[in-house]
Image 1 (cartoon, rainbow, N blue to C red):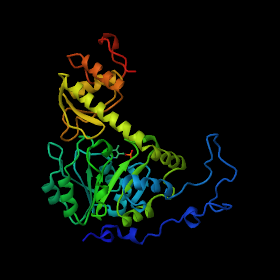
Image 2 (cartoon, rainbow, N blue to C red):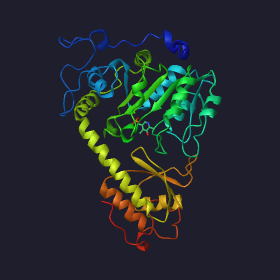
Image 3 (cartoon, rainbow, N blue to C red):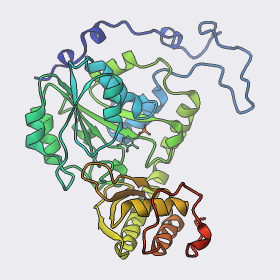
Image 4 (tube, rainbow, N blue to C red):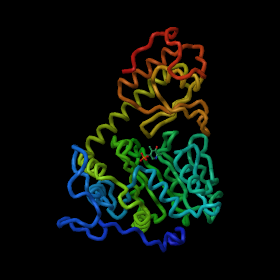
Length: 376
Ligand SMILES: *Cc1c(COP(=O)(O)O)cnc(C)c1O
């Protein structure tokens, strides 16, 4: 039997949270002299921001819940996904070598960073060479001090969905841990979200974000879906006003435009297909890993030279060639049609002899390079 009480750090259980002015009086009308705000207005011509925002983002959760098929009480909103990632570690893991998290490299870097910042042990069980969960090895590595198990599906940087059977096996077996499925890229995948299983698994946590499909990376707004009990704990330990008023207003508007989001997703998925086909025709491309996300992990004959050459041509991709199981790989976000065509054109004109990879960026002797299409 899963017990959140057993999983939480003891002092979190007994913690008295900060009670904000907006918690103590929730009415909308009245003369507000309770929060030491400036009553006169704001020092910007761009709007009125002199009042503190809703600490619980009620309007967003109300609009988001039916879209995601969850109850508002199962939603936590954070300053990017980074905030719930950090709060989950701090709520459950006693530092100093006592508790641990489990990650499956190659995967998103923030799980490890958050654990390291909090001085929490990290157990690493690599994915298999085809980037799937090594279920037996994971189950063997879990201890009674393993508080969090991080699964990223679709996985960054490999781009693929993890097999549902493996996730289910871990959810069933790791009944004393939280199993977090990071679905930052779920909109680009052909499968439904794990949010549909929240009521079946009290140890399931699902992360999503407004940064990718919704096109709102600059707002910094992450979603965490879990049991009402766990969401209550995250609310208790978060900074009181963690989501700014402009972010809340813009997110509320964005949620009225889900159809535009879906259209952009369809367009990006079509572009992903085009890009993969064009990359396949290049002799320097060795492997294009199947992607359920908005990027491709691509193995090149000489990743270092290709990366440096692309930078020199002002095409910026992510070098993942030093990452476990990603030898020779660059991670390429799907761009607009024009951007993808420029990438392909630039790659087609890459000189056969690799350029020196130690050239400082931007000081290459451009005059001696072949003529290249512009990267507009
Ligand atoms: C991009 C990404 C996120 C989103 O992070 P935000 O802080 O919400 O912008 C989360 N998880 C993974 C795996 C990602 O690649």
